[in-house]
Length: 136
Image (cartoon, rainbow, N blue to C red; front, top):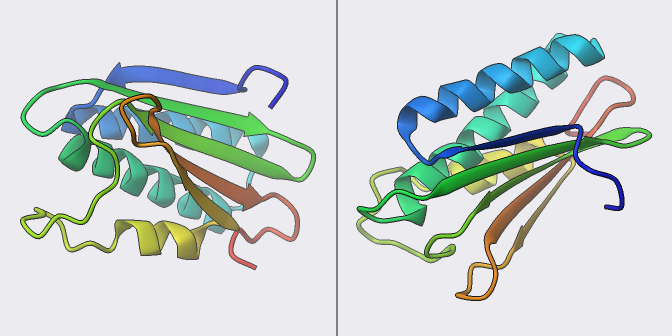
């Protein structure tokens, strides 16, 4: 994207900061006057992506959780980024493993990038702003 994000957050990847991010997206949804269901879908998907960072990215350490949102003509693109271990299967996972499938269901598109020593892990979600529905 050529322009800076419309919303940009950088917080430590701690559980309490997931609520901070969710609240920021609630404010963004209010400012954009998004339909309630679309706002709920975006907040839930972003919450799931941020929770994945908190639970999986940094093992027992703490690192940054970055969230960007860009409003384009008829969509909002949200990127949740970390500089941790990347996305890998984890048999000892503390979660149920439903986060990414849920995000895929709630969003118009989902892309996963990076996750190597050279590149941060990015979860890129796109939500349609037309017809009031993200998952068309």
